[in-house]
Image (cartoon, rainbow, N blue to C red; front, side, top):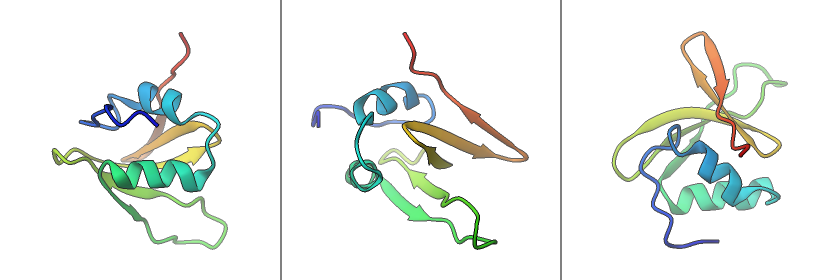
Length: 87
């Protein structure tokens, strides 16, 4: 993967990250994110709940998200949202 990519904020750079990681396994996606910040799984409240992660970039920008195939789904207060990487 492109080692010159610098992750500043996952939410604002979601389209680029999704494009970069498209087609990779979940393990490869999580490994890339871990190499570019701090990743921690959020404890699940229910057994069938999607695995959500807390993420912090090296500059301190934080967010919560889960993967829906090749799309990052961000979790906010009472909302979820995605960022399209379609050109």
